[in-house]
Image (tube, rainbow over all chains, first blue to last red; front, side, top):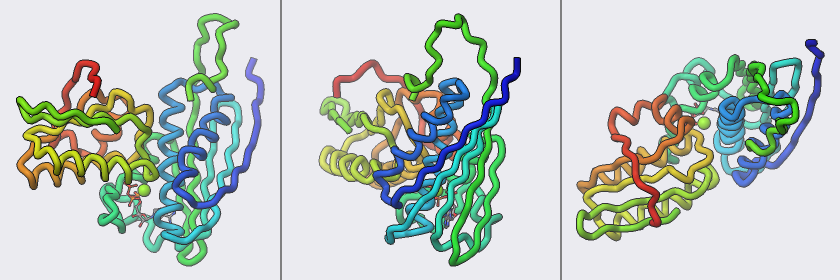
Length: 159
Length: 108
Ligand SMILES: Nc1ncnc2c1ncn2[C@@H]1O[C@H](COP(=O)(O)OP(=O)(O)OP(=O)(O)O)[C@@H](O)[C@H]1O
Ligand SMILES: [Mg+2]
């Protein structure tokens, strides 16, 4: 039976680098309700880490602002929105190019968007200079074949 | 981060023991540079055996240490990469520049 599964969550936190691990672990814990594989969970954690880090180092630079995450589960897919009210992106097409970075002096490699694109199924970037940026990503979670019904599937052990 | 220097073959093994992101990378960078400059190794091997998470901050970290090591005449190698870490390095193209290797469990 294909039960419709729906759930949502929201998270707001200060743009401090110490929140990067908090954000990705929280989203992974939420995503674990879809019973993803360890690899799918690792992909989600990495993509969230990239988007949140971008808010902290690019959108707000050295100022403190608020990073917002909204995540939604439907059947076999997770949607994640990560929003900042920071400086915005002038040219999204150029920003997405592999190796393009405006902060090479901070040892950034310009691979964040490339990683988000390849680890998630879809990514959409909306940005207005001076207003902020919203990244929306989705990923389908494949149905797993559980070995036995009693097997613990709560993926909190995988995080 | 833990490190061990083998004087005989001038090999510095840097074992990264934390998750690698923008937050943790500053300390790893500082400690790694200190060990490289202090020991002047011929080879620097980064051991990823205990790395349970890495994002693009790891790419910048390795490129930066590669530049420093090259300037000082040292070679760099990456050891014990997990599937996920390897995927990220492959995407960046740095594995064409820096060879991978496997290391026995080190007590660095
Ligand atoms: N939320 C954001 N607000 C403003 N600018 C952004 C934001 N996210 C990305 N950018 C811009 O897009 C560029 C590319 O981002 P990307 O994540 O691909 O690379 P990076 O952050 O520079 O380096 P890396 O992610 O590899 O450490 C950034 O250098 C920055 O100029
Ligand atoms: Mg980035």
